[in-house]
Length: 336
Image (cartoon, rainbow, N blue to C red; front, side, top):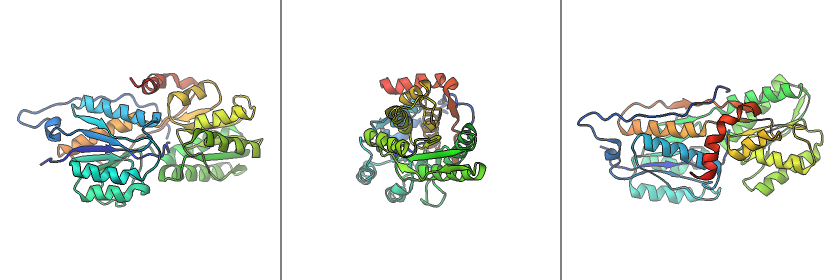
C-alpha cells in the first residue's frame, strides 16, 4: 500500500514570521500493535527528505532540528537534501529526482512560487504537507494540509505593540526579504492594523532587504538616513533583527532610539534583543512546526486522518523573555 518514500522539501524565503506562551518541546511515542508494520517498514528503507533553499541559514537548520528530533522519536529515517542559496529554480529538478526515486509523502513551504512543481508531486500520487505557509484549500488540489503560524495575526499584534510604544505618532518602516505570500500578508496586515488603530502614524511602503546581509543593511541604513526621526520599524524576515541592529549602529543611534520588532528566535537575533538594538522578536515556532508536520505525515502514512489546517502561535518576545530560547538557538548555531 505504501510504495513510496516520504520527502520533506522546504522552500522558504525566510519570511518568516498571535501571542501565546512559547510552545514546549514536543515528544512523540511510537506504539506498534502486534502484526502491524512499523513506520520504518512502511518507508521501505527509503528516508524522509528535507530539501529546499537557504540550507546555510539558521532558520533552515532550526527546521531541520525539529525534523530530526521528530524522525528520531517516531523511529523513521530522514535525510537533508537542501541546497545553499535562495533561488527557487533548482526545485523543479529536485522534484523530478524525487519522483523518480519514489516517494510516500513530501513536506514543503507551498506558496505560489512553487505551485507548479508541487502540483506535479501531487499528480504523481505523492501526499504533500505544506510547512510554514498557509496554502488556501483548493489552490493545490490534493494537498493534504499545512502547519504554519498566522502572519496576519502576529503582524496585527506587532502593529498594536509598536503603535502603543511610539504613542501613536511618527513614521514606521517595513522591510521584507522578498515578495512572497507570507511576508506580503504580514506587511499588508501590519499596515492595515496600524492605520486603523493609530491613524496619525505614517507607514512607509515595504522595502526589500534581500538575503545579502550587506545589501540588507544598506537598505535599512538608507531608510534611516532618509527618515532621521524614524520612530519604529517592522522587519518581516529572519534577517531583519541583524539588518536593523547593524543599520542603527551604522547611523550612530543609541539602543532603543528607534523601536524595531523583527522575526525568529535565532541566536544572532536574540543577541540583538539582549543588547537593546531590537525591541522584540516574533518567535515563530519553527522547530515545533517541523516536528508536528512529521507527526502528521507519519499519521497519513499509516492511513490515519489528518487535519488540513494546523495553526501554531507566534509570541512576541521581549528582552526579559529571551533566555529560554537560547539553548535551542545555540544548538542550531553549533550544529550539534
